[in-house]
Length: 247
Image (cartoon, rainbow, N blue to C red; front, side):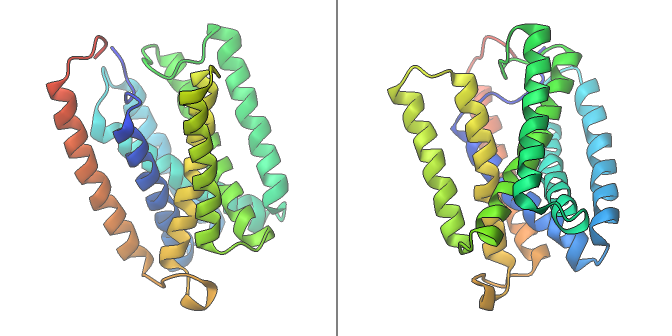
């Protein structure tokens, strides 16, 4: 049976909320709790590994488990990006290039094995494992790109969010106005929804003097989690009213 979420408007709304939550939760673990980037990465990686184990072993798509795992990938993406830039000193530009290469390698292996990169349905465990590796690298890449916009290019958090929102808008237009591959457009949208959520998360929590709203990270995380839960609830209700060929 299928193991992943169907790509609908609800999917993209929840993805953006999850990326915002991943940013605020990741910064809460590393900065607010004072654990530092190494320990924060170890904690989030351990949580992610446990969640993905249960997700991959699950017999079908379980919405709550799937979306908690997505949150964990975005949180881990925050720690990976910060670790590469601030602990390893690679910088966001070099870190982004490494993550691009990693993502392309995973997608190449996936295509070589299956001759297909379809993200729905995902049924086999090996295909799902590759799917989640691609998700982790794409979320990490999106985080690094969002930080590159604000840290390297000097854009404000709102400006960074607007830039990434514009890219997402272009991807949507390409979907409806061209015959470009839906799989290519999916991964482009998946990557760029991450920096949109990341820069918006920074806008919520960074100090006012730095262009943010100075909202405590735990409060911002709680608000994002509640919003995600509400949207997920309505998404599941809608799915129960619609018959999908593959469940």
